[in-house]
Length: 539
Figure (spheres, rainbow, N blue to C red):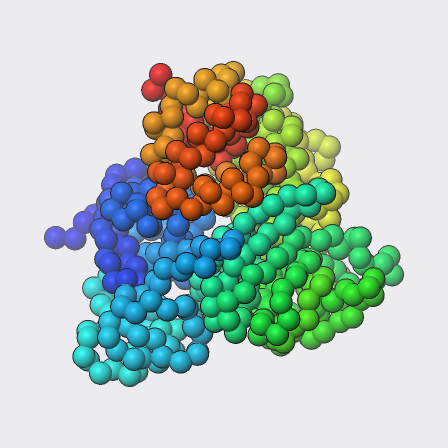
């Protein structure tokens, strides 16, 4: 007898299937209120290589955001999600193949793949069918099916993967080594061999002929675009400074936030290349969801621009994000709400500023549909709140170096649940809605109780060793705060299990002293408040 599907408000557990490229088909008990990270933790209990730090989860051709719930993705009983292991970068040449049988790098249309003893062409194996049908299996050894093979699968290729209308490419990811000096954050990714690889933090991708190490960082459009150029061109993605050995990179995939699912003129898209202070423009080889592809590139400063026409000033549909932060040191309940393009360099700048203001992020989904630069969007609530300086929030591009626009929302008496809405001021169309629950606020407030970081780390070291997740993000913040250096990170990443990595990290910050332990505690409050609250509650 088929299981009854949970209602929209039911927390009851039900079964889903998780398929991996190694042929595993795992059954996992979940509830609609589980986050994607909760699902990954349950997966890691069955296979340690499928945890939040080492794998990504895909459903309905979307890369699932670890902070959102399964309810948001409309997960149903007995459905199947797909799990891909991340490749490791940052200078380590070792790569674990995600296919059974002979270990080899990922290829895109470059020769046969050896799958369970067969030579098969990489284009015809229907991976989407595999995801949709939990009973579909990989071809049996000796089946002789030269037609069964492995295609690229559609999936949002931005780090956020926020658009339900756009689909991008599935690519193996590398996590870069991050260093900081002279106020700049540098990323270094080791690409282990021929293939296409995506940076798990920036969304920047490279197709390479052989193993190579790529170094890159974010740059600032306003520093390089002249005032006259800013009248003609609008940034459509981050600007990158890239350094790599010449002749190795076949193509670079530069992230953009234009929604190609809408009817737009793609001839207005160009790639800007800055050398010696001068800008030259190139047509992308092709334009795909979330990326502009440039073949045979030369490198320095590269980014995606869209030509601005007076008649179409507001006609560019953009992928966007709504970020809500709870200011813990402010009166009653005070929130900061931002509306920004889906640009990871801007998002990082906002998060850094809010950390300095002692604020915590409350994860919420993005707008339903693409938004438009030059337009204003009205923020309202189903309960009485004070919104300043105005309920209308302009949607525009501002450099990560600039203060981003936000509205402050003051809630004197926080009720059990309230909804916030965003509407287009031109048409009154609702473009975004999210619920804020008292539990969201109470959890953050509980996690912010004054306890020393040293006391917390000492008291809960055993639990942190086994339960601490999101290690790459934690390391990034510790590097930004100059708590650890690149040599220490390399030693830590050399450990063979997540538990050992966590133990090395905890030992390291304890040796660094009280300030380092406080930094780790503050980062965990931001990135894993549920873990902090659970551990503090247990005491």
